[in-house]
Length: 135
Image 1 (tube, one colour):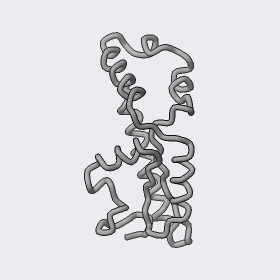
Image 2 (spheres, rainbow, N blue to C red; image 1 turned 30 degrees about the vertical axis):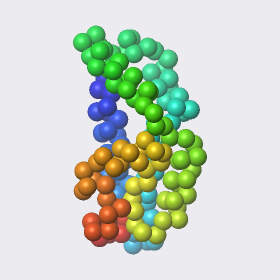
Image 3 (cartoon, rainbow, N blue to C red; image 1 turned 120 degrees about the vertical axis):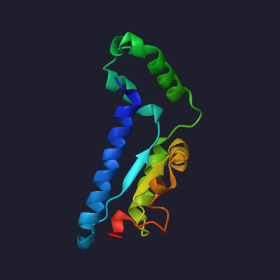
Image 4 (spheres, rainbow, N blue to C red; image 1 turned 180 degrees about the vertical axis):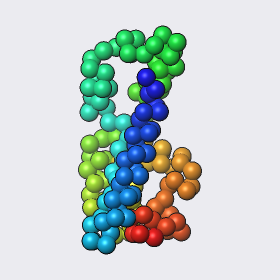
């Protein structure tokens, strides 16, 4: 069970899909935006994803120490996304006229976005072409 690989791959796929939609629909005046929330503890995602099973039941024994540390680091971080953070990011995305594609929601998501390589932080960088504007 590759914990972070599956999560990162799916998020990257969503970003690419959203960027493609933005490019394809721009001629019709339709904008596509990606709201990217961080960890929101109230969604209970882990319980739904694991169907109530413990990590020991889901992860092969050799992988368990790494998985337990990863999950522990994930849930013990000091920054989390609140529902109001997501609502605010949706509002900003809906009202945005700059062509920004990605809208991090929550202080943890903002921190992760800042850690990305500069070419992946765009389209907030006005010097880099933005798929949502066809540039």
